[in-house]
Image (cartoon, rainbow, N blue to C red; front, top):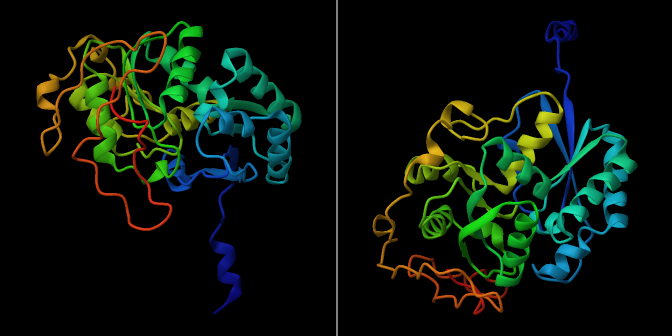
Length: 311
């Protein structure tokens, strides 16, 4: 083959980079890429492993400024134009001030604009004009409550929620269980639904839930990529997602939510009580729904813990 023919290819095309700092247990690299246009590359690094399950303690460990600085230094050789911290709990555990301090620490080390998942969430809620939201999390109650406190500090009210109580293997939760939780969270009029945790798969379920629930549906990975790409002056890729496609938004927040009677998963799960959690402790979770699959056999199997359930 004549090597001179390669001169006609004209590539590779120039790439712009987003540096991503993720927790050590992050398993959804492929999902992040689905929001990214062809002319942008993601450069990922992870925080060091610590033998702690998903909890507020882990959130604090993976968001320490020294840990962030080390991760950003590892990314600088690839010359990213923006940095993104892809972890919801790690970026809300310190409150609004803590989230801002994280961005400042990353920018100081990397000399480029920085975003976090929780900061991007507030930005996205403002974009879709959402002040009263429903919340879906895979977390235990204590982590879910900390997220609600962060949102309350930012002036956002949570009027419905569902949580799973998981402390590991969150990335194994199937779409059908995410959809079931969403239906149970949106039992009264809301401006938007937020599905938390960058390790919870959401890309394909977002447009389906928006069509069914008739409210904008935001997810952790979606808002992270949307916010980072905005700072590059480009758009995320997400067909039929209200955050990304403004044409999908008109009138969405004013329509009534899905009748909960239509949302029972296969097997017939009783509808949860529509009550706010008492200020002194978590709501009493019900038994996990029958629609949840049996966890895989053997050590390290994923599944709801005794602490989790539907609220």
